[in-house]
Image 1 (cartoon, rainbow, N blue to C red):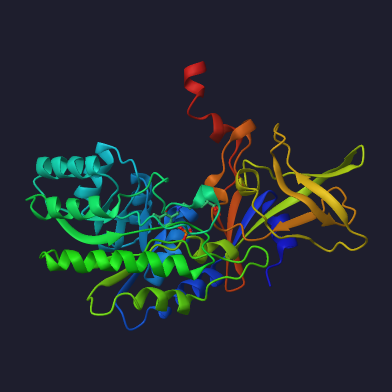
Image 2 (cartoon, protein in one colour):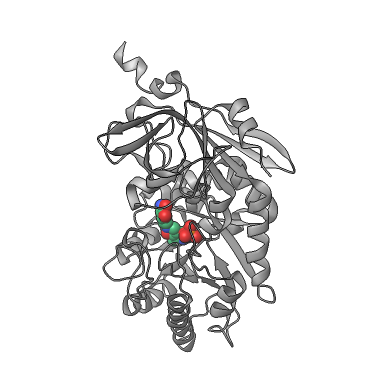
Length: 401
Ligand code: LLP
């Protein structure tokens, strides 16, 4: 059990706390679900990009799925071997493509015909052969929140099947391109296995039809998306997830690549915030806390539910909106959440904050970002210090003097 009270005292609030043991358990459960098949779990760095978190996964043997050259650099710094690093994303700048090629990562995920041409051009300039995979958009509804659904033609991601096939042929005929993989990622927080199996089937069929024309791929990248329990959702067992994918790959000698983010880190993370005041506007009850949308954006952006514990509090519970100090009506961590009467300095523990929590934070309202703490084998340690006012203005100050 993590002693949140003691951590809040030691490091102050608002504070992110990550259970590194739980991250390890999640990694191992998913990795072992694929046993019997060559696989790489390329951790989706965007989910929680703290260097110590990425390093933790690196030490477990993970690769990295990156969506900016910044994330690629983090992966290198964290010690992830270059042959396990993937660079994805719908809009990569030339300098990012160049650096990815110079760093000789596993492959670049191509998201459009124009991007393929760009990568070919840059590879030619550098006189290298760019290993690529193409992100296929299988036009499947993953049945998740529309903001995190990515596998429909309505979404900006990937290319349709016919385009993909054509691009593989182009790449295969190019001196500077080496098509090694195929990629699809239909969405995040998936709790229904059917669309996953369907997408995998569609992509596996494409692999077979490419093989028929002499294009042999090595990597089958199924993206991320495995959902977790925030409330009482039914989630997919990692073993069933792996089976659903592997069952579509019979006869294909491919290394499976997964890009899990949330599954590895969401439920290992907690956001700690302290109560400042209670207030009422008419009949409406508000609990004002020191954490805000700039720390944890998911409730404001997706209306996401996070379970919240009021530590050591008892008594009659009534609904309250838990709100932060930011000047936005959308600044809330929960709406109509049942809480006992709260007092100044009471501690709230917000669960499932280990993925897309800190990383989506900002300095809005000139609020310094929280500190981050790791707990491993009963020991806690700071993995990012709290931002100070000086940190926040450091890049502006000299221009205003
Ligand atoms: N691979 C690709 C290509 C992705 O776009 C993503 C997530 C992942 C892997 C990792 O997906 P995961 O296993 O974490 O579901 N901010 C949102 C989630 C955005 C996900 C973006 N892409 C949230 O807080 O729910």
